[in-house]
Length: 490
Image 1 (tube, rainbow, N blue to C red):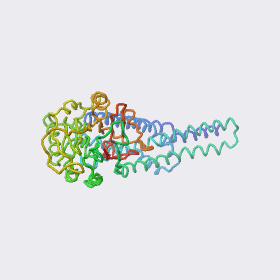
Image 2: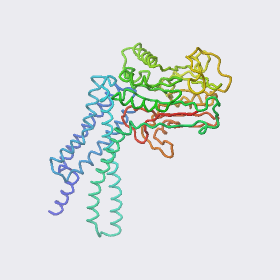
Image 3: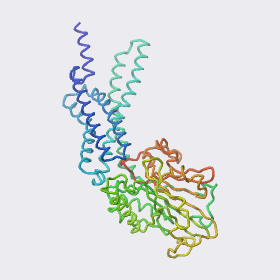
Image 4: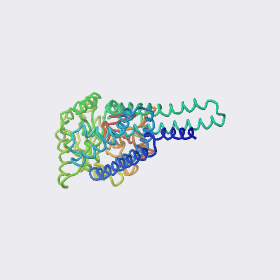
């Protein structure tokens, strides 16, 4: 009888870290209250302060639910340690929960758009990464437990020989492997935040080879267009980070630079510390840009509609000071070697209710919407100042459309505007997570966007290129989906 009681208590002590059922339920009740209060506080604050970030609320909700369950597994793995060490490691486990409370509390006092750049960029990112590490711990714990349990069941059927050794290996593996997986996950996430996020890749695409179905006029042969997108400049914490991007862009010696939207996260004021760096990004035939969904200030709170409009007007003014040309439902023409490159830009046009639909492609293609026409300053024409809009060249025309959201191409451009040869878009970021195999990106963004990264050739010869951006938003994190610019050779 005494032996049975002793074994039963031993089993309870192994499962309940406090050694008794009452202690376990007290801990469970405390965790339920802590996580329940954290979830409610997070949901209410983020819904009020970040209404358009429903996806972030959903992610945090999932992580909190998983973290609550994983907490029991983690505390069980500490049961064999001393009391002080167990308390220390248990306290570390609740660090992301504490940081989430700090983040939401700070949001109550000041909007995220007004935060200094470093906490605005990294506080929520660190919280999500730590929750993700806990998630990896729980996944590996469950996999190891299920695998070894099935192995033990198979061993019991084969006979009881070696039962004690197998049980011991089970406990050791179930304790060691999840911790190793969590440490590995943390290392990968730190790499993604500190190194990969700033490891720019410049892709080079020869359109004559990649899309022979839509030939480029001979006069434009060798013309170089550099595309960059989704800078989200407010996510950068120091001018030298933007300076490095500009330096690499200028080193490609493009004839023209195009920017396909999302310069900021919340407001135009994010540009101000970086205007000097951006001013060095120039090209012989100009820098052309369009607005993305973030550029309208929809993700920030404004006292009135006039302030919101003034925010967009300030961005356009900054573009003029930089010498960049904003193509808001407008176009320009570049003559070279008797042929013409037509660059058309539209305001943001996004699928669904979350994103503005201000792009007017039909208007942008009209002659009245052409801002000017001039000869190329490099390789094909004489050096001359910009001239008013005039008649196009007598040769062929190659038309490039700048449109921030690739769903605009899917819904409007394809088939309805067959004369547009190449559409350049951004917006998706490739979800900042994926992998590259044989020069092709694979990402969870495929679940949301039909076209999310790289060059897509259509049956009628039209081409769409989706740039995954050279900045980041929400998370200072890029894993397998490096920031990129793209140099097109016509």
